[in-house]
Figure (cartoon, rainbow, N blue to C red):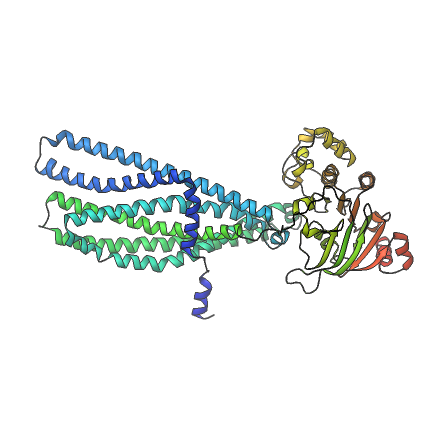
Length: 585
């Protein structure tokens, strides 16, 4: 790889820093009262530095050299008042800006999460959960450095430098020009380092996302990790991303440290020239004040350089967060509403292809489901069954054709209203780290009474085991329902679908995790529930859908056979082969 190629690879493109900072400033300006308090108190704090030097000059010349008796009490009192004002302004500036920063961070964090809740399913298919969590935690938190420490330090230190330079000009403008000669060199060096800092900050931020992703996957998959003896592999994988991130963190520290070093050397050069020139030219007080101003200026300039690191890290994080906030949300242009659907579903020449897929997932599909009909979808893995079901509540947008619900194009329906028409029980059971009650009465079901929840639990044959738990309905299920067995989790999910009482049921092998006895009970409950409701069942075990009104056999995104269980067996075709293969094995 050529040197030029390596250089190009080392620079990660970032958005315009000015635009990012202006956007952040608009958030901060919402808390303008605290923001203005910060500005005023910071000006006072910076001015106190210059006042302190002027007072030190007065103390040196009049208190020590002239030994003025009139100033014995006045000078210490003035010094006490000045330091008190400095302390109060310092506290007010830090606290008020912290108020702004925490409110901005909280607002951005909520906005980012709100956007996550509005994004389409395919966004999550293409994104790592760990990386998204890292955006909400690490990246947003880094923004506080932009709106607090960096902003406060830069404003305070810039004002301090201005005040000190003004005082130095007052003492001797020619001597001040000696120091001014090194300032362009400092600015040139900082300008050269800034792109490297920002690019490296983006790599650090991406590294934290990789750490979160690696840790989350290993923790969530502990049973698989242990049973397959993958502990060494996971440790090595985690160590790799941690060490890579540490490398970039140290690189940022090295760049920032070199900036501080260069500024200190240039300042030392200026100080040497000043001392050489000042000998025999100043009074003791003037010399002490001038050199004191010069020494006091070194720290603010170094802080500005250090703040540049925080600023670039914060701006890289801001780009990451704003990229998420600006992501296009789910298409929701429909304005029609249905009180309660009858349940008639019609597909008209529907096609969809996943991104980067070689073939269509659904290929020119057309069929009709009558209200109250129970339709089963069967076929090999990858035949398009799950994709078909995901199109109904618009988890994915179809690319060709039309899907009608009660004769209305589902794209014309308001998205929330469309999804109220469905209950879903998936083979991938989703339970939240909450109580059993809250997992059954979830979302729009939050206002359900305890009697309603118990009735749903009984219908799902879950009430018996719920009663045996220490806290009953208020028992915590643990992360992803880890404190429940597979069958228990499945029945909680079924109870949730029963409680919603939607006109259309989407069942993705809803009894797959149940033992034989539980399956019989739950299947009976589902049969009762399905009466008078349109039901689509994705079936992996053909024995569970023998009583379906109609079976659609799918292959490569198309319906290759359709009919009842008996009629399909009589055809001795694709379905018959699948059925006999299941029972022959």
